[in-house]
Image (cartoon, rainbow, N blue to C red):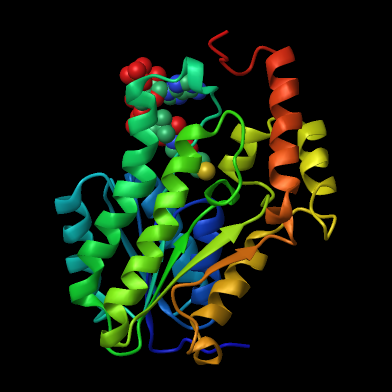
Length: 273
Ligand code: COA
């Protein structure tokens, strides 16, 4: 069991889904956790739950597309809890749509949240990170490494996120800061799964295409992040690490092709044809 007592963990996008599960994992391990997301109500609810689990939790609402708002959130965190030991950058947006039906603004919406948002979080975090010793983990996606139909915007954005990881690992290494990306598999109960695999059949297909033959859980993601941010992984930086039961080997593309085939039949996705 990893012990994060006395550590400060900042989770961008940390009020729901995978990111909340990661925040929960760090709270259980004794960390002070600060969560940020767009909606005030989500922030309040997450802080209440996290306060019941760990020593202390707080949060702020900010849109990662707005650098000034992100900077203000970091200032609030540091004022309350001190320098940041672990940064989780996981704010993301997604909807399935074929390229021929995607508007310029739709493509930009996802690039702005996932890629520009990641840059904003990293840029605003750096002055407040514990140096040496901090670890920054971005939540990437299988789309970063596998082409997937109806995901051109997300594939482009998440490939960019992993390059942000690699460049910052080079630039921040001399400050003793490690930078990592993790690639989740299909994680049960998340907004992303609801959007990309909206029927039980689509979710079963997703699980069947994972070499380990099951969907992942929030706890799977949290435990991986607890390990990666710990001293056991002190020589890992610039790495893009799948935490997905092997799904990145090809199953993710297969599952998406199946889901989109069904979605087309049901009229759930725009194709532009
Ligand atoms: N198919 C095609 N285009 C879509 C779409 C869909 N299902 N959903 C949104 N868009 C387009 C919109 O039409 C708009 O383009 P337009 O101005 O040319 O019409 C553009 O995307 C922006 O939409 P908007 O609703 O204004 O964006 P937003 O900034 O409020 O929301 C999203 C961002 C679109 C990513 C939204 O899905 C979101 O907030 N998601 C957050 C939650 C989430 O996705 N979680 C899963 C993470 S894996």
